[in-house]
Length: 345
View 1 (cartoon, rainbow, N blue to C red):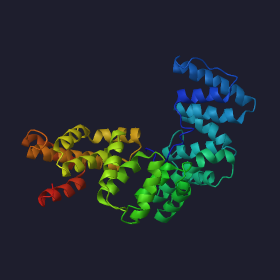
View 2: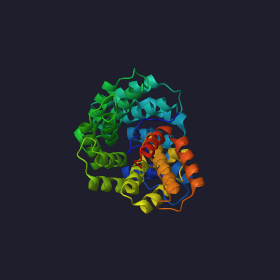
View 3: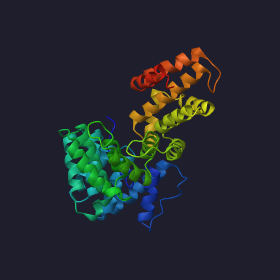
View 4: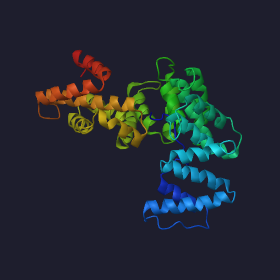
């Protein structure tokens, strides 16, 4: 099972970065040239951390567990984290993630939620680096019913706590999730959605930058502003937001900038369902919206080929891309086909 929990960016480091962090923490140690064989460096780091841990260094114990975690030695990591979970909130957080994913232990969603709640309620100053992550994850758990009874009210409550009124120190994922939450038909409040997407975008969220472009484009929760829409959509598209790219294609097409629309749509149409997971990991955008963006691009590219707008007319290729778009996201294509039927495209 792939985790929907947010990982803590300070602790969830690849082994190479973790080794650098160990060297920074312990100024009296040099583990070696970072260009050296990674296995050699990991071995040196393990020996060093074990020696520190044996002398009672609690931080070294956690870092040793984290090193095993990054090296996918989950059973060893779980054993270490479990031994210090009552005194180390970071270890408790990592255990929660491991129980959620079944890494080195059995999948236990109830225990994962229990541990996340303990982290979220901790007054330990050392818990600061994971507390917002835990609050975000609890919101996600309540929204989807992972280990708890689904509750949109509880999801909202935890995300508001994690978001910290839009502060950069809050969970940016929670801020962005609130933007999506208030855009949902079950909890509609587009002004709140615009506010939270604005806060998240200001704090670096690529997902929310694309969402803001769409809201400006169609006047959702804010007055229509095509200049602001174009700015948000172009920047988000350049950063890899495929959903933003799909709407940017639509914007160009509606302005009869067919060459621009065709070129951009053709590039995105090279993606398929098999690419969505990798795009999501690289951009931290939701797969659902990546799918929508690719389908939009495919449909508009097919329409351009069908009409010979911005590209040489090619009915066979048009049929092929219409079919690919429908297979990828039928709902998106159904809406766009309605626009074609009523001559809005």
